[in-house]
Image 1 (cartoon, rainbow, N blue to C red):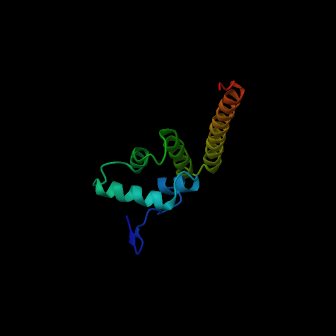
Image 2: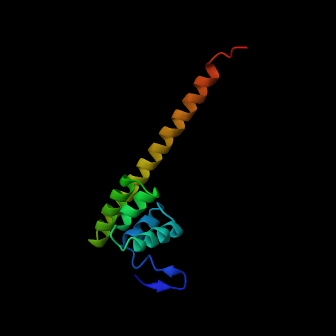
Image 3: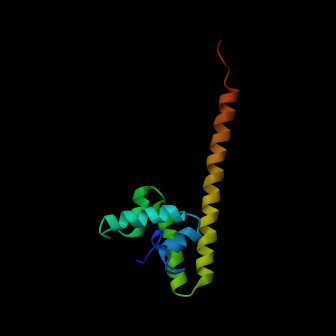
Length: 117
């Protein structure tokens, strides 16, 4: 890992896991730097993805998708990489819509309940 004036360099190339996670907008550069520092503090005994999952920065599903994208990029299969990212984004949107629907349903249920004086 290279050092620079800002600390450890976490993005060496476009196919490393950190780059993929940032590109997928799953982590910020600051969060990635924190994870790399935590990894270095643990003598590098944990993989970066495991550190990020343990920190609560990403989910295991996020990590699995990022690893799929990373593998496709390293194999030069940009179509598969992009398809994996699109599929992942669709799942994120669906989860967000589901959460919003549940919140609206609960609000409507609360609204429909008679109030007792």
